[in-house]
Image (cartoon, rainbow, N blue to C red; front, side, top):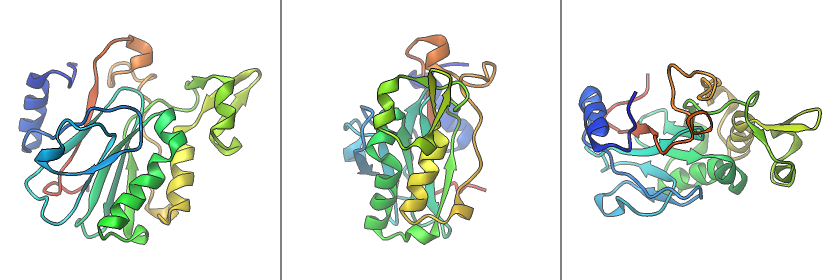
Length: 205
């Protein structure tokens, strides 16, 4: 399984998906979101939005244990893909993602959400300092150890931002626990990355 940081791997994936090479960002674990455009390629940020006029473009975000979050309207006119680890989640990336799509013309009540593979709560041990960054509903305590539930916090934020609970998809596979299927930074400690693609020309099923 190759790293999507390698252009040859991105080219191969794009060919399989029958999509153009994706626009990429310099990801900084923040909450900056850009509209899909060639002029935004390489800018600092952790999310993309797409809307009418963006057909023919493809965008993507790198992930390695962080959550790739997909949002799209039920009519397929608006969509976005976003990268959120604990820093982005604590800063409100799911909330900002909904706001960015609403700003473009989408309605929060018509958004659907899906979580891509990311580290799951049962193995995502974090430091005690994060207790001040998340509500108790997003943390699991096991003795003196604390685990962060990215899934729970993303759901909490999306619902508060107006996304109907029934429109939010199920939990995704764990990157750390599924060694044969996914890259995990915590497991491999290297610079390899997976890539979450998005295009208005290929709608989710």
